[in-house]
Image (cartoon, rainbow, N blue to C red):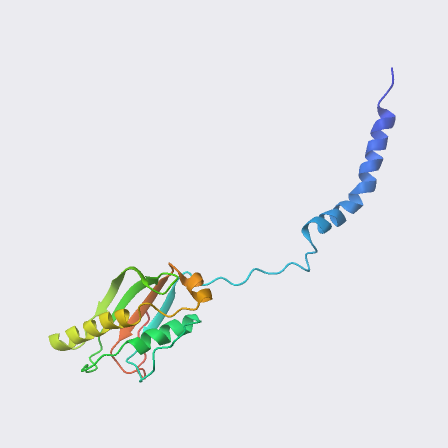
Length: 168
């Protein structure tokens, strides 16, 4: 009967001779690690912005960055006849790819200012009109694809931008 000893030695010799090349083979299959690129940074899960009474800005024709979204929303907000009373309302909103509002905006917080019902109604009406005026938001195709369905939180504040706002 023959022994398998010579074959076992031959297999071991083959594996040892191939093993130094395994990392090189893997490198060829998966690319050089130095050449691999990091994935692009992802967008935040949500975006928060504070909207102050506008300073006469025009609504942009194209919105290309996240900061442009807050600027556009501020340009859309045109409160008339408001006196600074310290009110604020925080809304959560999402947009479709084409810039239309997705679903119904949700009020997540309201802070009363001075107790003046007429001023309060004018304030909340101005926020509603801003959402209508900014819809559809003029997103570029690239930004629209990136922000579609993501929640945005905007805090509308009826105080001058020089005052330090409370955190969201």
